[in-house]
Length: 315
Image (cartoon, rainbow, N blue to C red; front, side, top):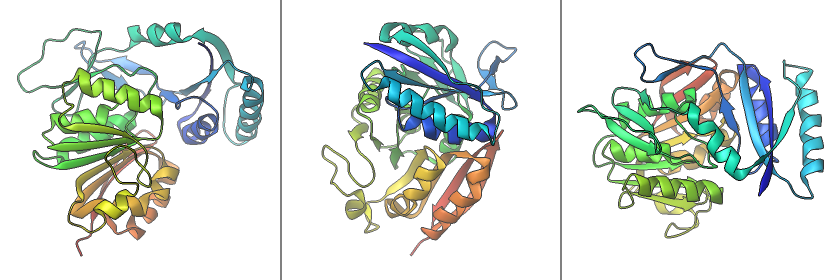
């Protein structure tokens, strides 16, 4: 299948708004690319938070592509009256070209103290304490390079303990679910509302040999498929079978919309790590999580991005 790759360049404060516009129309989701610099030692990258961000998405070349493109261009024009947003660029690509062309830019990189994200097509000689996460993102978001993913992984290192249960909401490529398993979680449930992301995440879980620990389901907190009940709140809301750690690296509006559900599936004194939040939306998310019964115990920033750690108030 051929695709129309669309993308625009904007500043950090506009990323969430631009992403929301593209997400309404594109297939699977958007990619958010920031400029990176390799560390002098040759392993890992520094993400430049002070440079423009490229937001991309893909439209299938079908009968609806022209109308979708016009709607996106109109919405971005209105946003451009408020913030500096470049004109939308479009390029026809084949799925094979898309999936292979970017691979040369994805290298082994280190996150936090022990996590090493390794593309499936690159070799790496691990050090004794390394926890290797092998990833082939496919058509799903999540390579570990973005600041929101980096901050989430660092906080997971701080809070995920061996033997715990973890929920990864909006799993994308499955990277955070795999990190949780590598950190010793006894069981991980990874949810995503996109079937391609679910397929990609399942493939990455298998690539890491973690099928016995990580289950990937199609669905959300309100409605998930497979062995999971239609309402996770009904299953986990009684405080007996809740998750020890809940991870939501998505966007501010979805976090706020799901704040009560996030709290409902977290055990008393359990931890919620929320990321993907642009700085200007931070107070809104804090209010939503606090109203849902979570106490914000820490906030972390990388450029204009914020990650929050909340603890469920014990009954």
